[in-house]
Length: 444
Ligand code: GLU
Image 1 (cartoon, rainbow, N blue to C red):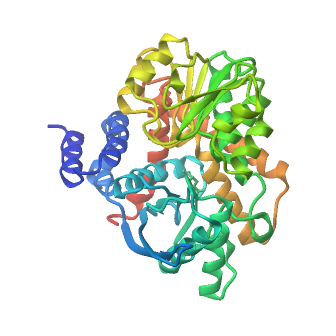
Image 2 (cartoon, protein in one colour):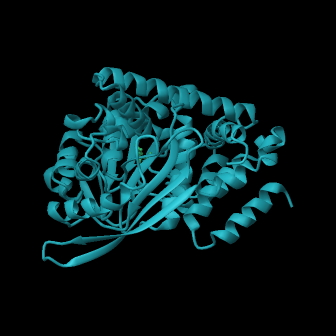
């Protein structure tokens, strides 16, 4: 049995009830086969054995009072996965599906993603099975205050710097930071990112993940002789990532014809009206079905089926395992040329294989959606310098970072005999820097 097979077996045995974590590990280990053949220190220093074990996992009770005055209890998490190249960094997800497996897969992936940005940030992730949907502002605030009352013991600007993810946006970050500041009696803005602009937030942070995905897709398309001009794009989701991916896709001249939410999807062959969609989802927090009530050419369909829509580029920006092998086959049959992963692990491992076998270009999540966390690191830089940069300055830096991520992923794929396989390229490029630091530290 090879070293990697043996390791994969151990990880499976130890984490047998964590399917998402095992899926994420399996994908990375597979990419690293050619790296291990060339670099023997990785095995000698047990880099991978160490990497698949989070440095620390924190789970805690989050009691909170609802509008009726009743006590509710949720579970809070922070998985501090890897601090080899910087403080743990990664978002908080508030969603009823959150469990330890999801937190660990996200923390694991974050380690490689953050390394790819070229900035000094380690990997972590946290959140809760609390569902902000349908809750009042007061309930969300009560929950955030209670969540931070425990979390503050474990974070700090040199230790761990959380941010948003699904269910955690500007409103939640405001409540969380307010409580952090109060408990510590200290204004330390670089302990959280995605903050409001009046208290240490950065311009472009809100747009950064969506914009970054399109900057990456644009680089990838150009490299393969394509452009985004007039391409039909389908985006899943309609949250922060999906919205700003839509905006930037339109700026590149593409036509976004469909978007979705957890209840269904809308199609408009004339193209989505970004501003109307933004108001509906970002400001009013309403269901996407209401978009079809406003726009006569838009059609709403309840349930799944978004990936049956014929498109040139699919950009899954909703959640993990959004495109399975059957949906991948439909995309291929419909002539899709590229998949840009906006969400984390939105494509199953089987679907990825099928897409690659059919020469579909894949912009992998760890690379393509790294613009969000990269801009978080720029927010931290501005905070510690007590400065704020202009929109152009942040946006230009983000563009450069995304170009570099593409270049490094492309070069690594080529160096290890898989040109055009950006999944492998991104995994290898992200891994090398972390591995190098871990080897330098000896055993920890
Ligand atoms: N949650 C985002 C991600 O998946 C952003 C994390 C951050 O800004 O720290 O990368």
